[in-house]
Length: 370
Image 1: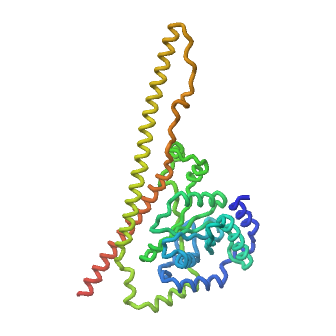
Image 2: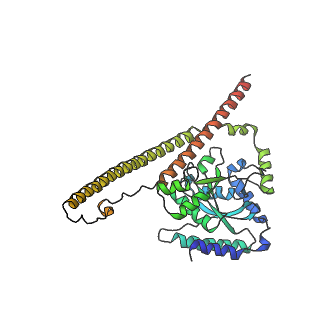
Image 3: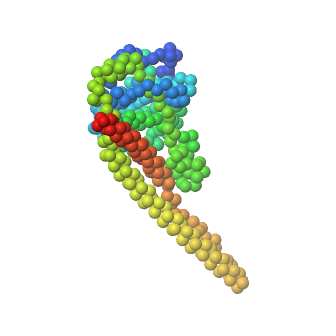
């Protein structure tokens, strides 16, 4: 039995009708409130009552932040974990999470991870905490997460658990005052395309795959428990007035510079891949010309032999004489294009927020002088 199938069987057998309508225990709320004290970024969490959001996320953000701070080495190391929750009507509520276990190079990560997840979910079920597997989360470095590894993992999750979602958290960008938390799923077209494992340009055109149809972003609604809301109110009252202008910090030039450098690297990768594809088209055109000339020459020789009363030349396998050139896969280049699109959106967002801060700072400075 495959690891994902084994986990899926565990989820189905572990479902308890009494648990479907239950909420996180008071201990979980206390843990979330305690974790919020350890994280200065808790002040960025806001309530959002939008009814248009398809997925709703509850108290898992603080645990992810704490996990990234403790094991992420300042945001440079990859951090991953499991999302737990339940499907309620037309939305997915994520109420709990736990990290993937650490492992040595000699250990089989799949085997260790599956056994650890099953044991964790069994223990959570025993204390009446949401234990159904609904996705996974991952940290990213300046939003660099669109790659083949993420596609493989998310495809396996969605193939085994249809409602699965991946949550991307950027700790480095969050330290600059922007809570970077996004949810993604593979589009239905991408699921069909990836299932065939045929990444040729023809198959991509058949399914309409491009950098815009790989992932679909899911709206997120953050909801805090009453204990966290009370803590935020208390922290807000204790905050000094001169500290309330920290949101006007203009120190985003380093983030913009880093995003532009990464964007330049992606452009170089696309340029190299484009040159490879152009070379393939050029070599393929030359091979087709040579093949047509060979066929035409054979036909002329057979015509001359027929006029002399000689038998025609034996048929030859042209594929052996002219071996088809391997078609370059376009998926990697499409992923790079998607990453470039993500960088461009981040640059636009940073630039717009920086301009707004500049105008606000100018107004405050003018009022202070007056």
